[in-house]
Length: 124
Image (tube, rainbow, N blue to C red; front, side, top):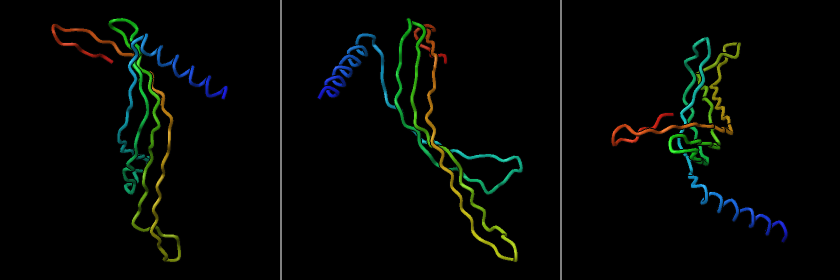
């Protein structure tokens, strides 16, 4: 019961601090199309569709500068699909290899905004 109370108090304090400092929180998701390149130029490598999903925040420092940290779970990799591979003795096999790599990415983005006339520009 004590842990539940502590977690509830912590959640309320974090929520209040977010509202007090006008930070923006959001969710980010998307598609990754990744592959790998070898020096010998292997043409049997194909795109491996993956994903990224995570949370993002925006902390205004002043009217011009903003700090944007993100926490993303990202899937990358490649597919190796040769038509046939010679294993010796005139025997061939079909070989399919799919590598999925999962990363925890933490990009730290500094952003500046300025106005040009009536247009607000964003510069990363």
